[in-house]
Length: 167
Length: 292
Image (tube, rainbow over all chains, first blue to last red):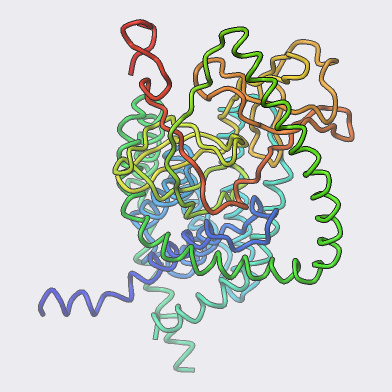
């Protein structure tokens, strides 16, 4: 088997990484109405959590690290924070998914809500550590809410991709 | 039935492959902590990595940004078309006021030049600038920055102030070869030495990752009133003086905040000032305190 055919046969395993990276880029695009930019849904995190829950074998530590580093660079956050947040999300989700059987879309929604909450909590803590003066908590809360509202769209799109990969 | 057994087999396989390997988990978290610490202690290393990756991503980001931005603008244009009659009425009134202001301004300019001659004051420094395109939005609750499509190849330097029509937007925080990052004045890490010119009252304006800016002074702020215009003071040599920062507003609880003059997310282009010592009119031989 040549290297080329090996890449072609395994390319489907890169789908989780590619979709997560594309969603991360879309999240910094002008997708929200003017004035509501600071509560744009965290599409990249939704996508990453989905794949951690449904295909933890593909979305391993290495891919999570790549997404974390890329997110840090694109968002301009303190380097390493997104990486740490991504690792924490994976650790917690992996611990839970074996106790709570994944049955339907509501379970996916629960896991994604949990991931977004963890993500924003970590960033809020880092922000409080570095900026001692007041922080606007409402932006964090509303960004969490908009992310949860938008997540079913991302879930359905990725369920389609998951079917294609698994079949 | 065959489908269900197949699904169970796949799930069992996934579980087996994702066995909770403690060593890998510990190593991953160690890596994350190391990177966090490295960023904190040796910021130069992370800086170069960030600039390189951002350069490579710029092509994809810029090709995606244009169509999405056009679509977004089209949607907001629809609401403008709906309100065109009312907007026109407001504009006619504003235009009449504007004409009066222009007349007053030309008289003031002449007087100002005469006073300058009398006092023998040298002219203000005129900074050169580079126009740059914005290729991302500041879409997060915890950081306020955008990516610009200009870098070292366009002579952009780290720390250069970024303006739009005499209003301060922020400064360059990270420079790659073809891209750079603009940190907005609304970001929590940015502090702007400012002044309310009419009252000759100096304040420190700070971002807090929100739409509005905060005043950080510990002194009495009774002099500051709603509607006061805030400008950069030029102290600390981080920003040029007399750039418009924003207007003072009062919150419902009585706290004073500043509404920035321009929302960075409404812009497509910005001006990056050339902020080298030579451009600022500083001679390193005469002023040894300044160094690159």
